[in-house]
Image (cartoon, one colour):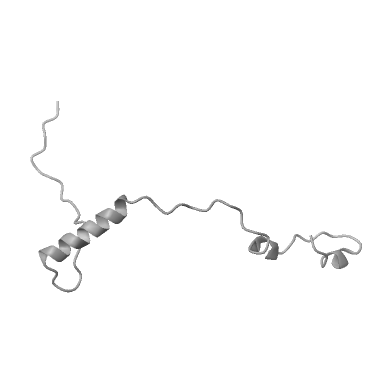
Length: 78
């Protein structure tokens, strides 16, 4: 059997103050905001397909097709 370790693993701090000297109240408020944002569900994603006007796929170049009159057909709408 394994015995519980006496040493605790060092934990990374949740926040690190880079500049300034915040007091305990400011750190508590910041910690509450960060924890609340981490626990909040993400915004609902819009799963609808883009409209034909907003679809940028039509701007991509069509594959080249060799053949008689292919250069003329390359300008036709698809």
